[in-house]
Image (cartoon, rainbow, N blue to C red; front, top):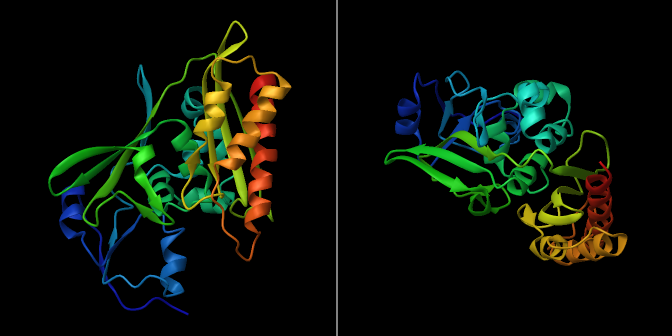
Length: 281
């Protein structure tokens, strides 16, 4: 099957792109999510706005954050020494996104805006308290990651807004990270995935981040698990309690890939593994 007919526009500026966007339009960045949907006719936009040539790619580290242009290729971010030093959990998560061929074309912003609840990038950015910059007719606004993901393939972006940058606050250099993922095949979306960051002082956890993908309509922060970890010595019993708490916070569904109960059980297993990795890293 091929795409239904649509108009095509390649704007020369962000302002031109925003002026063209609205209900019935679709943004083409890397095309790794949109093009298959067009070919399946799962999406039938009247207008496709191709932003892939706009100057919105790049990686920059400031004193307080890692800033990624929305059109930064996934592979470029994955292999960037700046990303690996500033946000090692993000760099590790990127290696699990689809395959190298997809990562060579796909973009950071495209993955975020696609908002697949089983995708790695939305969850790891949620764990990092990332902030998204959007341009619209009224100007620029920022959206915290916790407010950005509204449901499967639904975000807080308005129909006439364009995601242009992602700001990832830096964690202390003492932060330790872990991730664990379960998928049916190496390049598949996760049945469940967990991303963790721990900051400790004198053996006590002072900051904990636990984010889960694939086990709810959106990526989620396991806040109860984080509360159990903060202020505690990360003993095996504490990690086990946090893992069970993370699983209890999920809201998975039954589908053709896995039953809900299995995703919930695996969230506990994966959280335990990710936390152990962060503790022993």
